[in-house]
Length: 603
Image 1 (cartoon, helix red, strand yellow):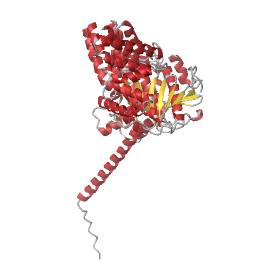
Image 2 (tube, rainbow, N blue to C red; image 1 turned 60 degrees about the horizontal axis):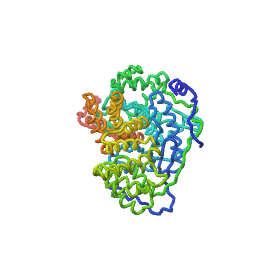
Image 3 (cartoon, one colour; image 1 turned 30 degrees about the vertical axis):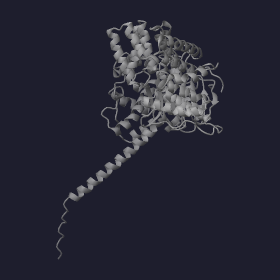
Image 4 (cartoon, rainbow, N blue to C red; image 1 turned 60 degrees about the vertical axis):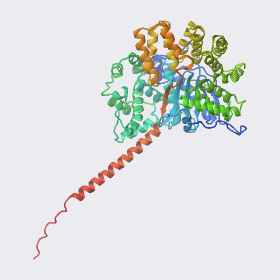
């Protein structure tokens, strides 16, 4: 569907459909009492695999909501979304029943965060939080029922990552955040949907501003490289929600009218090519950055609309479930953390924990897989081979296990002499061939095949280069895969395509290390590079050498932060009131006593 169809969508009814079927040191992982009911389930749909310890009914509602949201996002990004080169791999999500469990994912979790998508060489892992039960909303109440706070955060995180995964948009950040908040507030009923509602935390910020509290940002800040410069801690905290609120207004303004939506692609492409975002905003939408705050605030108060329309999805998404043991669920969480590029201290700590705990339950495959991954990434890959080889012999061996086995063999091949290397490389090639048959679009397969080609042939094969490029075209959310695609196009002497992806990486604020690499490599490319120099860059990334770190997409608990902002404002008001009262009392004490007038004399 193109913009003409979207105009019809925004005006009244949606037509069409999507194909679907019917309705520090980690703690010990081992859970005793395996015969007790386990909260852990694995839910799979067309585009996501969700592992969760939340209530099964809520997991089902989340997955259905995400599938409908995914289809809606594909409609809205049809004019600038990427067209995949092959089957699309499913996105892995962990849906945690307790917000505190996010602390297990990364030791540097920002204050006020409630969700994370993390991009690494092995793929992207999403961590969402279940905050309270998800209850269905009837069509007639979609525009008035309170938005579910936790579902908004999960939807916002998914919509944000959708842009990174399926489009080339990396700037401006204000657009990415506004887009994600706008679609985070979508509600789906039985036959209808509502779009354009004000998200909970953003509505709370507007009420705060309407009480007369000052603002901290304008749109020149929003479109600049550092919107929070010169702000102290208290003001910066308020500004974080203000940023989201102003970004939401901008997105609502652009997406709320078909004539403005038609100019969106030009706006984004102009910024991608290096134009000043403020100039691009003026040229595309007639918004002068110096007056945008007033114009968009007026739009919010007078023209912003909430639309209730028929859903374009005529059939409920299919969701299949598998119950997991409590121990398996905990091991899957540990394994996902390992996939999410932990820092060295965290990775090595997980290796120690898993070495102990997986040994207690040798028949739990999830534990052995997590331990094998820890050994490949942070320990001795040879120790991982026995279980991985056994798992690979199964007819239903997963692509994940096969890729991990290949990576273990590649790590062992790198330092080996020529005689021993050949057997490792052949084992890796066999595993990757089977993995590609199972999940041909998986980026981790393409990266491993490039490593194999470099080790076996001393230079990248055309098949390996084509595989990297095809994988990146299918899903564009992986920094390491984008880096490999840049190098592949450079090796094939296709500078325009390489420079396009380099600009994406340079505009991407999620991973400062990758952004710095892209800027440096772009300068080297402009100066001229030999094929030998390009091969040397490929070897630097071989077998996960550059996998440490990764890109973070944090989702902010807007309501929680606003509660803190309101409390601080109340304390500041009380402090000022007390200070004013003390000053008044001091002024009264310092005044000389008044001399009473002399009473008239009496006769």
